[in-house]
Image 1: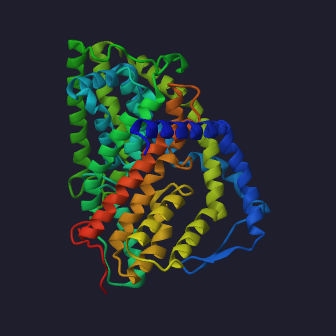
Image 2 (image 1 turned 135 degrees about the horizontal axis):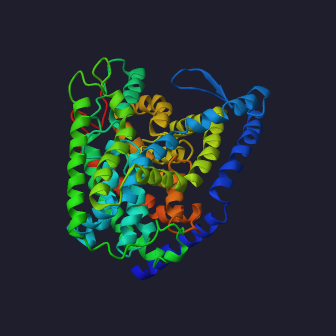
Image 3 (image 1 turned 90 degrees about the vertical axis):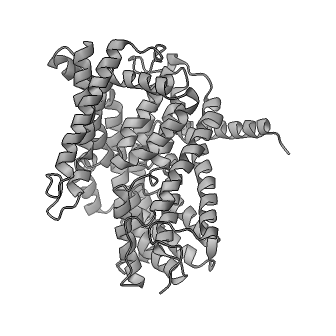
Amino acid sequence: MSSPSESRSLLTRSLDRIEQIGNKLPDPLTLFVGLAFLMPVVSWLVSLTGWQLVHPGTQESIQVVNLLAPDQIQHMFTDSVKNFTGFPPLGTVLVAMIGIGVAERSGLIKTMLKMMVSSVPGSLISAALVFAGVMSSMAADAGYVVLTPLGAVLFAGLGRHPLAGLAAAFAGVSGGFSANLLLTSLDPLLAGFTESAAQIYDPAYAVAPTANFYFMFVSVFLVTLVGWFVTDKIVEPRLGQWDPAHAVQSGDGEADEDLNTLHPAEKKAAWAAFGVFALTLIGFAALVVPANGILRDAEGGLGPFYHSLVIMICLGFLFPSLVYGAMTGSIRNDRDVARMTGDTMASMGAYVVLAFAAAQFVAFFTWSNLGLMFAISGAALIQTLGIGGIPLLLIFMVISGIVNLFIGSASAKWAIMAPVFVPMLMNLGYSPEIAQVTYRIGDSITNIITPLLPYFPIVVAFAQRYDQRVRLGTLIAAMLPYSIAFALAWTVMLIVWYVLGLPLGPGAGLFYTP
């Protein structure tokens, strides 16, 4: 039997090899441009086979769309701008970065990190970062934009490798996206698709937004502990000592060796900023909490609130930063604020160009129907296996993870897969709730290693601020241990939950009885 040190050495060598292979790929911009040009050719070749499927939900015939057909070529030209401006991460990233950029350049973020360092034991920094990433799903996708760069800044300031901090935050945000101590906007969204799919089999079946609450509550601690271990024992040791010479020469990526020193003026300004932040939250609450609140729809729903989260995050950073900057002298007038926001947008230039290419590829892939047909084919495959119990659930989890490599949106995938898998599992005696929780596990474990995740390019861009040599292979190799560890840990947890027959949420069992 090999010793632990030999096992770690083998793991390190394997990850190094993955990184080397991955880094032989072109620059992410070139890669997405190439994929965008390749997709029409692939769609044309596959369309020649005459491949057709029946959508299990609508019962409509689906076939591959040939993107080289004249009308589709016209479509690609006329919608190129719409693809770009409608690319989900683009507006989210740029709007949120306005507030975050002022917070960073005014010095507020640095001071808040100093206060965090002084209050959280050094041994728990990684755990705190992963936990914060998991909990960030309360603010939808904002964790990708806010926490991943903050994780890198925090680790750099502590003299640790910034890419390890970025990886820990990314693992929490992306790998733990489905988990939370509270219900998030994803819970009612997925429950709606699950209920519709369940009613294909049982028209009276209802699925509550709390369907997976108990399981996902416990998952927060599982993801935090596993992410903490992987960061400190695998990822950071493999990365070694960080060399600031490879950082972008803008000062953003340089370590702050004075992170442990907190000046009284900084502390006073930070507490004032915190007070402003609290008042800002109270103001937002006044728009949401009342039954007739401005950020509620006509039926009292929270749709307008969820759609306002990005601008709320921007303002939540901006208002406290203005107060902090005024008190410390880093902001003397409106020109300073304009300069800070302009510098922030300038630093995002590479990402904006990358987003244009990625948006075209994602749009072409969607138009071709290839992703949808792959999902339906996977479901058909699992139906032919004729197995049940834990093996069936684990196969479903694996298929969900594989489909996630091609379709990034959790809700979009479930809208496709639920009408197939939920009735199928109900027919075998499994509840829609366990189908949904198994899907959520599979979706989470491959989020952090698929370049087709809409936020993957922005994470690469953040990483390149600290090491210009970072490529897709570097990030995938850093995140793969998290993906494997989360998969193993969640598999064990699902098996234990199943064997003990524990409820997944209030009134949500594992099995279905007509």
